[in-house]
Length: 98
Image (cartoon, rainbow, N blue to C red; front, side):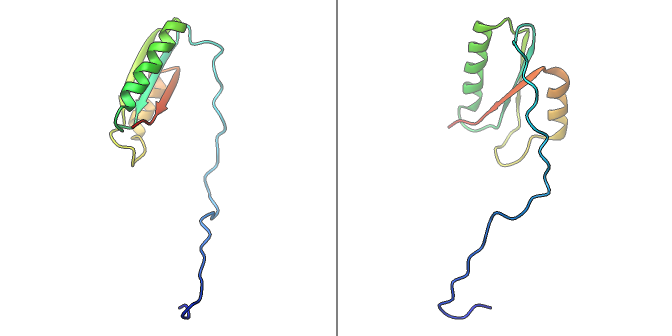
């Protein structure tokens, strides 16, 4: 219990048990690769990702584009969706937009 006029501060930088896996290796080129697009369902996020995919297709010989929408920016993508993208795609791009 705090006394009147006592200032209490909280430090939000608490420790984390999350271990970083590091950055995934990047391909030298997207030629012949399948590109996945993962939207978080925010307004215009799918349009942004499609525009990025169109630019990539103009620059590279992208084999295929696979689109997925996780349905909400408030929750992580379902494990099955991530597994499906990992199985079907060589690279995945995710974005948020408004």
